[in-house]
Length: 197
Image (tube, rainbow, N blue to C red):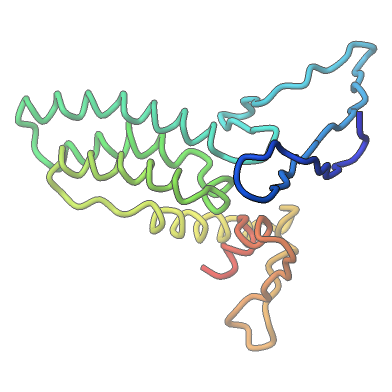
């Protein structure tokens, strides 16, 4: 077993004129088990914590898949209400309480780093709800921006919050200092997004 990521090259069978070389990436990491009170902690692919599914590879695909499935199940009830000829205003209230609340749960934590494919899956649920309600619903990106602003305002009002120090006003007093980030993951996370919003 390798202790770090290594690249191994080997010759493949001759299939076309000339030879080809295939690359095989061998990722073997030897993790030592973690013990808490003498019991080993099990290593899992995904774990649910405070309603958010956290994957071992730090992607949000598992969480978004679960949330999309829950929201689609709730769309059934929205369709039933439409069959009973409920007014669009009541349909909108039901959508906000039953479907949108599922799609946007802890959104400020995961939406910025979600991939485009997952965002499109979430947006498809919203478009389906739009057809059911027969009214325009806000896109997910707008909801995310609004939630970032709201959360940032709450953090600014609470001086004891650990993230309060990350919001530093520039000398003009109108804008905040942008956090320098070297990685895309950090650039797309909550604090830089909230400062830009």
